[in-house]
Length: 106
Image (cartoon, rainbow, N blue to C red; front, side):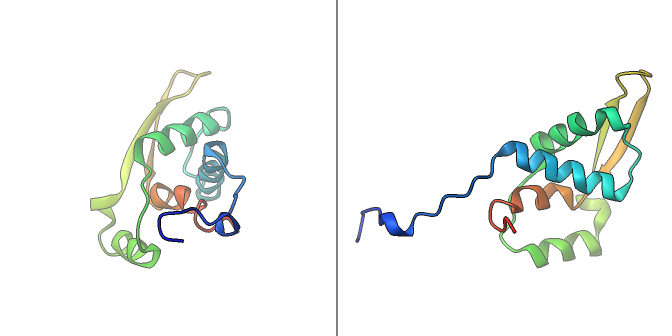
């Protein structure tokens, strides 16, 4: 099987970018960071597109954020579409937990 695709070993996972956006939106809602409800999906999409990355070791990544969070936490500033006021949120674990659903969809 060297150099050939083994068809029986291919795994299809019906997960796409929208699922990551919804997952990040859920994580942000659970943290209650002060995002206007009407902006939560757009904010989650922006966080995914600007800050997300894949990490090789989930436990080490959590430890990195727990020991020196200020070094790793990023800030996102958005504008409320209705009131036109700015809001700022801290983006932490969401940066690497979003893409993680590709590898652990459960």
